[in-house]
Length: 293
Image 1 (tube, helix red, strand yellow):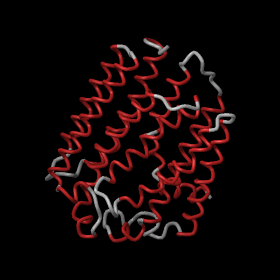
Image 2 (cartoon, one colour):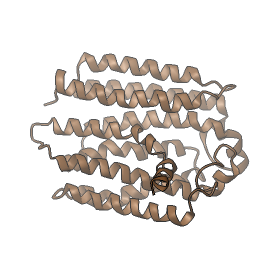
Image 3 (cartoon, helix red, strand yellow):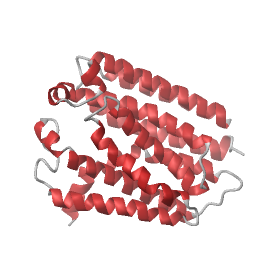
């Protein structure tokens, strides 16, 4: 049983939950900082359960629908389904269980109705990403739009409303994830072209794709500045934005059209620092420097 659990955690890349979860938690902290908002421990539990369940369902579904593509790609042939480490039936069951858990976990937020009402449409949008590479080169931004929902959903779970602050946080996530997913997909450019799959590197080539990713990350910094300005955060947060901009610049220095060997360093290590850095900056600013009214 421990071995099977480990296999499923590796299947869904559980460690990559860190990319979206900090943004959801930052939105939650901003929501709880409002004078008219009560902190309920069960809301925090609900956000964590929903995040893990939704992402687990989406990743497992992705591995299911891509299993034949993964088997044909030397870079991904060792994944759990092509390698026979997990059966299709078990992954289907895991996907159904995770999906049901996500919908059921929205009941934690009652009497707020919006989380439950939006749960199925949100889940379908998350699952839809797995098919997007078959018909649009903008699949990277479908993924980023899916993750963008996490801070918006966290805010809705706590305040039962749509609002500007989580949307701005989502905008940061949208351009950041879209940019680094373009970088990551450069590894499969030739394979995607041969299989008729859509991606920005496959359509425009790696040099142009790297420029598009860099522009997307420039917009990430712009969104961070807009978040800082709109919410009236302190110079502490602004100084953090400068550090994040430097990390993004370094990320792009690591990846060159003729040298993609350091993409994994750029993809995981630097992005993990950025993700947790934004959460830390936001929380410290709210708690110590300029709590929003």
